[in-house]
Length: 320
Picture 1 (cartoon, rainbow, N blue to C red):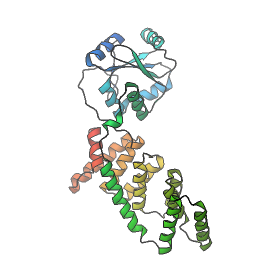
Picture 2 (tube, rainbow, N blue to C red; picture 1 turned 120 degrees about the horizontal axis):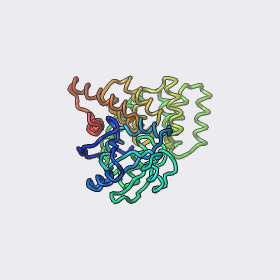
Picture 3 (cartoon, one colour; picture 1 turned 90 degrees about the vertical axis):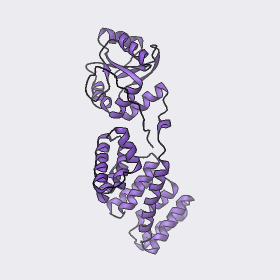
Picture 4 (cartoon, rainbow, N blue to C red; picture 1 turned 60 degrees about the horizontal axis):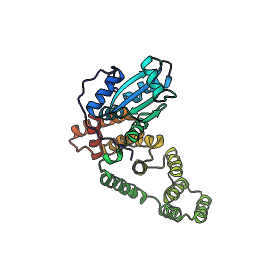
């Protein structure tokens, strides 16, 4: 799963450029260095120019992201430097800044540690900074594997109950397709599909989905899941199972996000919204993730239910 970052918050008196953004110091470079040395943190220098469009984009998006702000607060003392003004121009030359935006990282002694050049999304920026300073984000991930395995198994059991309600010939065909996929027996699979097409059955996409599921080919699986959705021939519980399948493999994309939204919309329960919140987080949709977590808290309180474990983690992390 995507990297979750645990942090310790420090209450530091700073002058910031804006609310809920990276706390950029307005003092000179020497003051920033002194503060970093005192607090035993790295120095983050954000080089920008007045005409740089991507600099403005990062300031409005990446630098106000909660995960970015939290991570930077923990590890860095930061300042912005206009590369066309004397101090900024001098430091840009010193650290060989070639384009904008460029974020330069120094250790507390002023030695260059690394650079993050060009525009970065929030998740990419945290990953890049962590790599530069040698912080292993995965080491800070709580072990939710048992919970997710239990959740996926439960959802798989629900999907299996629905599977067993299908006509016997369809059940047999789907199981054969899965086995052919598992053993990569394309010849037998083609023969199976041809025979079913001759009979004029309407569940060919499900047969193909099971074949590619057997081969564990996510790209092909998505094609047939979406086809089944268009034909309205996949249940909400089955779709929920596939959302969990892709999330566990860290394969969340726009398709999986749409599926998670549909599952939550149709089921309207804590389990579905719990899955939705995690998928939103993994996709980088932090604003909607926060909204989903607020809904989970409200529903749990109203119906006197226990908040799911992964939602508890995200609620604690975001600070709701």
